Amino acid sequence: MTNQIEQRLSALGFKLPAPAAAVANYIPFVIQDNIVIISGQLPVQDHEVVYKGKVGIDLTIEQGQDAARLCGLNIITQLKAACNGDLSRVQKCLRLGGFVNCSSDFTNQPKVINGVSDLIVEIFGTDIGRHARAAVGVNSLPLGAAVEIEAMFRIE
Amino acid sequence: MTNQIEQRLSALGFKLPAPAAAVANYIPFVIQDNIVIISGQLPVQDHEVVYKGKVGIDLTIEQGQDAARLCGLNIITQLKAACNGDLSRVQKCLRLGGFVNCSSDFTNQPKVINGVSDLIVEIFGTDIGRHARAAVGVNSLPLGAAVEIEAMFRIE
Amino acid sequence: MTNQIEQRLSALGFKLPAPAAAVANYIPFVIQDNIVIISGQLPVQDHEVVYKGKVGIDLTIEQGQDAARLCGLNIITQLKAACNGDLSRVQKCLRLGGFVNCSSDFTNQPKVINGVSDLIVEIFGTDIGRHARAAVGVNSLPLGAAVEIEAMFRIE
Image (tube, rainbow over all chains, first blue to last red; front, side, top):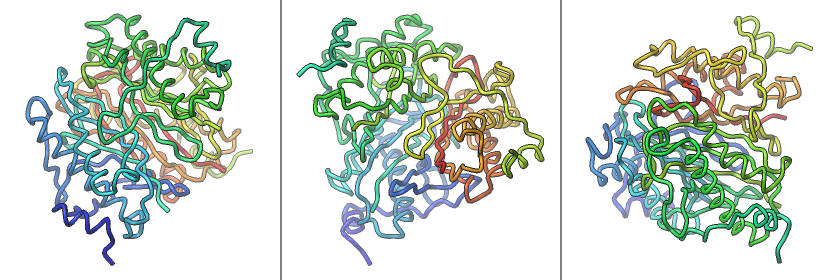
């Protein structure tokens, strides 16, 4: 049962990562009424963090954007699970919280986080995809990841 | 149509900044039921970040508070737009998330974020204005801003 | 009136800290419908921050976990107040936001934040206790605290 959202993912050349296993006493997402709260996602593929290091030192802005996009694909993977596999149930991206692992003089966090914001709009369209967001820099992230993104969606 | 909230803003000498234009695929706020989720706001006036640098190095605590207050005025500007111009529709400030760009030995984030907490209570009164909040330090923020604040309000 | 949750706290040897007094124009929690939003809690006991410094420099991972657990006990204290003293009204831990004060090369934030995640599941059980979460590193926290945790719960 492939729907329009999945078709758009494929057409754009994106492949959803395998869902990360629950690693502890927290879970990848919680559903409250029709709101899905998704845990902070790292730029993980095949169960490994692909983008490590600090943007502005070890990674360029473009690499940071790639990292943010991969976080976004992991978000969509979790969201799909929350929708029992049917991404056409997604009604609105409400909020993204973006953390960029970076040097103390790096000031382009918005450009980095655009990697995920643009992905979400590309996949879900403007009406559903555009969201509120916070983008900040931090001095370190889990497993040395370059970016971490948490999210909140409304589904039907 | 000037209401009590707007009168209080004027009486205290505050002037709301012009609403920041949408700069990317995210938007300044999202409304879900009667909850307004407001994107992280910077200390911007006339489309420029006025307070740049790190509190504890480049800025004093007082300047950090001024930065937080200006973030708060930008929050109120967005909130006003979310209320179609009528701030008397604001029922409760639910949460503020405050990020202070600071040195690694700075520990007065609460005092800095009081700049926005006090503003919100001054403008909306104690019952509506008092809120849950998180205040943390970070090593860098977008465009070099000294403070970034995101917010969640209930409106009618 | 001691209920099952309180009994489990006692049986595990935990004692809830005294609720922190409201220190400013923000408050320890806000209730919106049946959602409790709890302000960022520090590792405070008897009104003092017990765990100060940076994990990876001044504190070991284990000490960081202890700090996270103490933040969690403060969260439960606030949650109890939100439930008018009856913790059996807690239906779900929806989200924890964890900030670890750490060195720039520290990458074990998840292990540190497990200190609070494990506590919540231990006390409330798997169904109620497991939650979405974000865990990030930061270069400084209020009063020099090693960890800060904010939370969101559903209550009946």
